[in-house]
Structures are given as structure tokens and as C-alpha cells.
Length: 574
Image 1 (cartoon, rainbow, N blue to C red):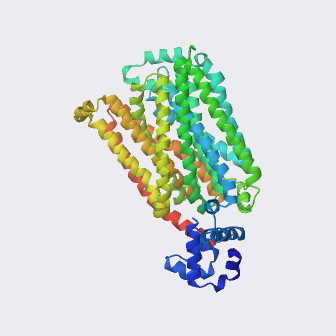
Image 2 (cartoon, helix red, strand yellow):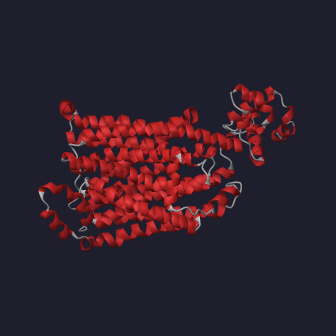
Image 3 (cartoon, rainbow, N blue to C red):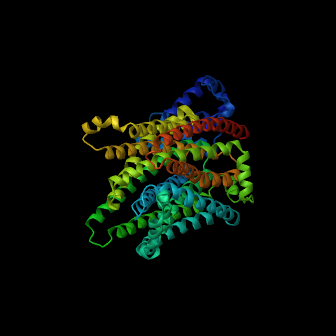
């Protein structure tokens, strides 16, 4: 065959024959065409401005497969099925990335339901509102995240990755099921409503701002649910899934498939949003005394079912993929079994001394602070427009579906940004998007009086315009995060050694993310106590937002330089 002749005469090929082979393989849709015959392609590599030593090596099986694909594309005799088969990834890659993508789909399906439900619970609870969120993130989420980091470090040193993953996901599933079927139906008996009401009534006017943190105590089971839902995002999504994916995926594969993971995940956003809206419709026709209790059981049932599918896919990966050397190199499996004994204090000192990890943490913290500053103001408007939990939940379902649809488009654009502009440009898109949309959102709030004629011409009210504009701002910001910020962040971990990946990722994702949100919350609390209200603090929050984004952009440029150097060093060692 053509593949055999190529291998037999590799060093006798002329420049034109290699050029024709490369063209044929490119027509078949393969970016690795130049890797078939490394030695004879030096003139061709020079013509394209490439270094031959930087070209990837291919395994013999992969080389033979590309040779057959070249024959199918070059002889013109292959049918449509043969051409389609030539464009597919190799079987070993499909065997690995297909279950990974499915895991990400179901993890995000559950997370979207949890994210929408946690807001409904705490914002519409008795004596509560959007102003409770900054206090929740600072005094409940952050301590919980720090405590979990210590616990995770202990688990990672005592148990295998498989045991840690299975045990943690199972714990989350058990809690959410217990909450829907046991805790929430007995919330009236568990919540100290009368005691907190007495304290609030006795507060002097100067301490009226304490009603928000007291609402956390009044609705403490909802606060625990809120924290567990937040931890699902930082632990299951960021720490467990991406840690596992980075272990079994190479950088070249990550550039091709991580954006595609996001495509599937945002299809999950659309479907989960539709599911939430469907459940909302059932609540409207329910004759039960508490329709929300029945819908909560359906929502948590969906979360539990998605979690069980994730566990099944993970077990399949352990049995069928991790044991296959064509899918996962033995060195990666060995790294996953390596234990690290560095404690939390030593880990913090290590991260503080590492510019690479410090810049990564800065990116995560700045995103959390930025999105928190604009999100709380929007949710306050949202509760005013939809005070009923049913209506609030239905709106959030539509919001999630729109976010997924917009992110799908951003994912397609993201692949091209990675391909043509590189990691550095992709890392700058999210802060730029937040800057532009945040400026529009705050401008509408600050200069809303001068826009009254426009609001009247649109046939709406200032409240609904604020809700719609805030929703658009959040959709665009989150879509750029899901499509570009998250893949960029996860790619940055790949060149690191095993210890930095394990301890560094735990600290950055599980502490950095809540710390960013808590930092934004502390700013809001300081402004509220200083100027009297969230609305009065809007101009100062806008200024803080732009300063944070400037720090974010600087850290992204610095990390791009270090990431490029790390990848060049890894390529030289390979």
C-alpha cells in the first residue's frame, strides 16, 4: 500500500513527493500530516516557517492509519464513507475523549440545576433577599472551601484518585437527595425563625444592615444547600473532572478537544434550562399545599441521576481507558498514583513562591470578584421583578438555556481563536468581555434617568430593562468564561509536574474561586456599610470592577509568557 511504500522509501522521497503527500493528507483533514516522514520534510517545514525538531512524533499504528487515510484521499476512489472515516480521530482518542465529554455533559447538567435552585432558595426565602449573597459567599462559602481543601489534601494522601472521586461525588448525591426528601419538608421545624425575628426586631436602626447575615441563621439549611451547590462547581467540575482530564490528556489533544467538551457541556446548559422550565410548568398546575416542595424533588432527582451517570462513566474510564496504553501512557497512570505529603501551610508557601501558580490564582480570583460585583446588583433587580419562587425559577431556566446557546456559538469561535491566535489571545477575551458589558450595565444604572424617553419608547419599565440588560451581561460574560477562560485555565496546568497539579490545582480552584467571590462580597459589604445601601455604592463598585479587570489583564499577559516557555521546554525534553 501507499503507507508501506512511504515507510520503505522515506529517506529517498524528493521535496515534491513530500509536498504532494502533505497536500493529500491535509485534504483528509489531518493537522499531523507532516509527522509521517520527519527527516525528508525539512525543506517543506522551512518553507512553512516551522522547525522540524518541533514536529510531533507519531506511533507506528498512527502512522499506518494516516497512510491509509492518505491513500483514501489521494487515489480518488474512496467513497463518502471512506472520506468521513479518514476525517475521524483515531480510535484510541475516541475511546478516551467520548466518555470524558459525556462526563462533562452530565456534571454541567447537574450544576446548572443546582445553580438555579440555590438562588431561588436563598433569595426568595422569608426575611431574605439578594443582599444575603455577599454574606453567604464570605462567611459560609469561603470557610467551607478552605475546610474542604484541607480535607481533600488529606484524602489525596490516604486514598487513590478513583476512591476520592467516587467517594466525593457519592457524598454530593446523597446530600442533595436528602435535602429534597427530608430536610426541606421539615425546614419549618429546623429553622429558628421566631428567635431570629425577635433579634431583628430588637436591632437599632444603625444596625439594620445585620438583617442580611441574620437571614443566613434563619434559613441555615438553605445556606448549607447553597454552599454544597457552590462546592459542586468548584470541586466536581474544576478539581475532580478537570484534574482527571488533565491527567489523561496531552496538550495537543487538549487544544483539539477541550473546546469540544465545552460544546457538549453547553448543550447540557440548554437541556437543564429546559428541564427547570418544564418543572416550573408542573408547579403551576399542582394542587399541593407547597408546589415548590414537589418540584424540588424533581430537580434533585435530575441531579442525582446525572451524578450516577458520571460515576458509571468514571468507572468505565478506570477499567477500559486507564488500562489501555494506547489511550493513556503508563507514565500518566503512575503519576496519578503518586502521593504528596505537603501540608496546607507548605502548599500555600509553595504557591506564593511560584509566579506561574500565582498568576493562575490571580486569574481565578479576578474573575470571581468581577462577576460577583455585577451579579448581585442584577439579582436584586431580578427578585423585585419576580418575587414568586416559581416565576424566579422559570426565568433562571430560560437564562440558563440562553447561556448555553450563546456559549455554543462562542465555543465555535473559541476553536479558531486558539488555532489562529494562540493561548494568550484566548485568555484576554473574558476580561475584555466583562469590561465592555460591565461598563454598559453600570452606565444604564448610573445614567438611567436620562434614558427615560428610550425606556418609554421600548414599551417597558426601568426595572424590566435592568433585568434584561443584566441578563445579557451575565450571559455574555459566562459564555466567554465557559468557552475560553476555563479551557485556558485547564491547559495551563498541563505542563506542571504532578505535585503542582495536585496541590496547586486544589488551592487555586477550591480556595481561589471562593476567595474571588468573597473578595467581591467584602467590597460590597464595605460599600453598603459606608454609604448606606447597595444602590448608593454603585459608582464605587464600578470603579473597583475596572481596577480588578486591569490586574486580570496584566496577570494573563504574564502567564502567557510563562506558559509559552513551559511548553517550549516540554517540547525540547520530548
